[in-house]
Length: 150
Image 1: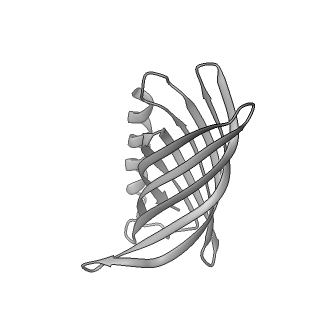
Image 2: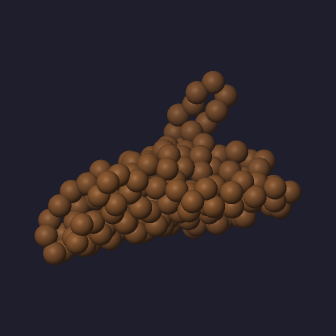
């Protein structure tokens, strides 16, 4: 719990840097299954790479590391005057839980909203994870998060 508070404090501290121009790199936190750190780098066009390091807040206490290549659909839908972006992708991940370590593929899909000042993105994402090594297994990860871009 102390780690989550530290991450959120860091994220809020970065908001004070809002006078800086937004860049292609975003760093933030996610809360859900798993909760932890999130990073994203825009490749230009409508593509990005994201990565996360998270841990479960449930009793089994798993740890997950992932990286994804994303395709983005800007302004995919609108609510009132707010435009929301859609992203989907493919990637890989490692999950460790209760002596099991699974390596496999991920398929994330999510929606996001980007605030221009300060340069903050909030998002919701679901990701199917299929472990292939050493045994097959399947999880759905879901998280709500935010990133500050610099």
